[in-house]
Image 1: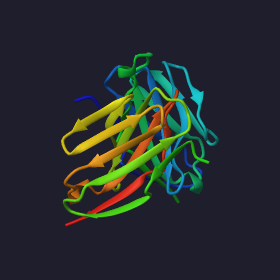
Image 2: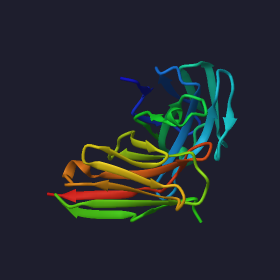
Image 3: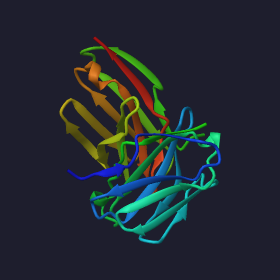
Length: 116
Length: 106
């Protein structure tokens, strides 16, 4: 069964800490994405990567950075966590290509981060 | 105005009822996802479709590209169908609707 795995389901961190959220996929997908989900705002794109060592800002990149050293792993980094980064974080991946059948996304189970 | 609008925002039903959730969008797309999210859980893709209709068990999804509209139907609803259902469209990257919260009571 193909998977996107996020390393933690629940995480509690202190303000100012450096936080790493890890995402691993086993489908050899080129594209990987990080979203955050907040009540009333839905899912918003933070960063995405279309290849190893490549990254692009999404709609809300401020306060975040990412790392893609290997194809299967995409890390989201909070350099100095703040309380307004308390949220549900979701990772997704998909294969690249223009054929319709290739456009499907696979999502992880989410990491609920609380910054205190 | 959001590029992807879902209705209704909240829906309650009795077990066994037929349920319809609607999604309208304003951008050109190549495909559309219907996603399911259980409380505290991750997101599961139910369907990805670009035309016509797809069926999986008690779930049916339809899309009309010309009218920029899609519907998700659940036949013979069950309490385990209680979840948030999210429509997401793909122009180049995913654009999400804000979701429909469904509660099915026994």
